[in-house]
Length: 261
Ligand code: ADP
Ligand code: MG
Image 1: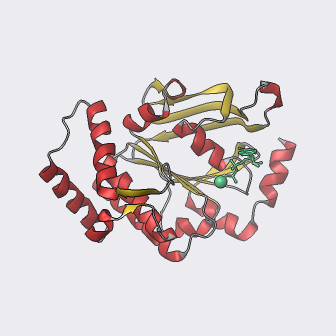
Image 2: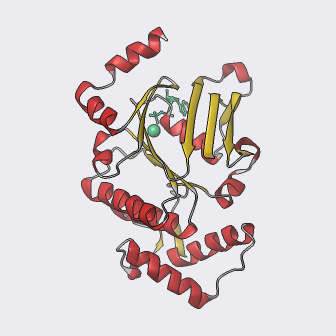
Image 3: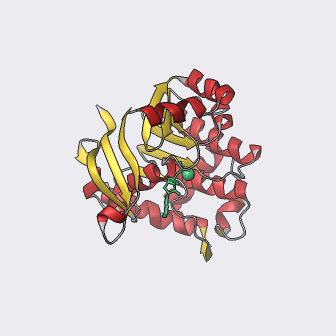
């Protein structure tokens, strides 16, 4: 069964008058099965982040047509917290700084909420510590990192580490990664991709939707499918060779196709 099924999705920026909002997604179709890694590429402004935001339930968007089914349920009827607890994780969901809030405390609270929702008891402190240690090892993360405050004074690479660590701990079924950061350096790229690849080995049923402007990321994360999003629609899908092709040819062909479509 598909874990995620998006059909004919249309969305506008939320405005007082629906007709005033600019249409951003214009009939998007995408199906993701458990265990698959999908990459979405496309030029700036094509609607990639909008898709990630709509999936995670961020407000500011209005769905005017189409459907999103997640594990057989209507995703659009769930609030963002519910989506998260049901196993949809958008990395970079908490870009805020939380001075004075240690990462491990923050993670313990987040994990408690997720476990409650799944009908599991909260972990005892010792169990939580053990889990954190195991995951930190998987991600080759220094434990002292976990005592720092959430995102306070973090470098780009450290933010990524934090996000990937959250992802590892909360154990989502569908991981969404929006690589919006144009300043992503090689170090940060490797952190993200190592994390994704390790989580994938740990749980082969996890599905990933990796959104990126850059072909480079896909040198490290090997996608099963690559989709090209232009002007609110997926104009082409293929395997990883499509990403290489895009690197050579750019998006001009796709822009032309989307105009004539
Ligand atoms: P991408 O991530 O592919 O670069 P986005 O989804 O961020 O694209 O944006 C798609 C389009 O919607 C762009 O034209 C962008 O300017 C516009 N847009 C997105 N969010 C907003 C917003 N909050 N206010 C105004 N325009 C927006
Ligand atoms: Mg974006």
